[in-house]
Length: 158
Length: 462
Image (tube, rainbow over all chains, first blue to last red):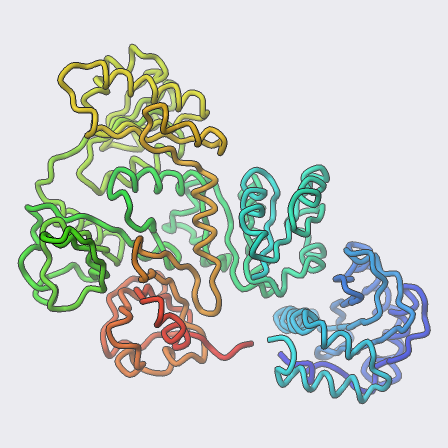
């Protein structure tokens, strides 16, 4: 599975304003709403579902990266977006580091296989330090979209 | 290689310690003290939590790991955790189990249903190592591969074997069996050489051959290979799972096994479970028992009771009895002993014990076979050769899935595809064989041709 299969370029946020976990997630879900990927009426329940998952255990996987995710019946297929926070946000990561780079994923409950493959692909690509560094330094959504495309073409981690 | 070990107990910690100098190791355990100790002493990442907590597995990046070893003390947790790891995207998953029933596929195939690459049992691995000391010391230690459907076993041909003097292509081997390699000692130079078997090879007495194929067919072949070989006596002290696995393995060879178990109820169960074995209800730690059973006459004595001290002391007693009996040559008696504590192993040879088998060493050796990449599941080398026994998965989109075997252009003389297992059925592959994704093959490959061969079975990367 490739980033192009589920990433929404118009929802990418390169300058996250929020400074806490819930704020960041609200902001990223908000950008999916603005991009027309999520209906306004589903916004709060998606944020709530993601936060509920975070309460069970953080999705901060270390090295300044987090992958908040959930399943929600309001979306038809996998949708995802990327957020960058220059300041970094406290996310209860295993290594205790604040998170600067977030990949947020929402998928339909009936497609568990796709959901796992998307998470696997994100995790695999994020193993590459260069990829993460470039993403964190990105100033525009186009920069990020281009990096995702390059990753899809196997230019970073295998 | 990136490895996640679930369970930091004796086995998990030992594996972590062995692997961490060369690999990127993560350990998860519920006990904070265990995690603290691992973090303090080893170059690993260790986290407190449950092996089946999906959020922790996610955070610990199980999704991108190369190998997951689920080795907690709870077998059901291990099966579940390994299955989760595999489904999440971890390349290979192995679970440690205790119950022999989990190896039996007649009602439920745990490996296949849970999509686990291998179930391993510390008791079975220990028994395999013990059996190796009895059967063919110094040969490759493999027993079952391809989710249990293919047996690999090395055997030394007796002079009366029914398969001598004819070429392999003329030999009527049972349906699924193939001779993989032949190890022969040159009569003049006494030099030992091992090579891949060819159709025109003629077997000689004394050859050590590697048989590969379905369980029953390999056993039938063993029978022919060992024909009329004088039965050797093996006395097994202890009636635990190790003893049961050992007795079962020895059943297919020319051995008379006597098992000594001190618990009455257990010995009755064993007698029913192992009809070929003579089960005695007695305490092997008493010299009197050993004298009554004439251990000085036995060919092999194996101590595999529950604790190291009993095993060592009983073995020392046996050594003493053998040496104090007049007219008996000491050299043809072998004493093998299970010793769990690694520090004890150092002094064993001074005590007259021929070989100590350590369960955790057996486990670590087994784990080493899974340190593979791509389509390879496990690999074992044939001792003193550059030939390896490879268990390979046919991946979707691979050349092996596309072409028939003869058109695969495998390196000539460097590789022998000895067996293929399709949906649990083993067969000898033929030139026009067409493999399917998900099939397993067992191949003998020379080191310099491995990449070339494995590539034919590997699909495009995800």
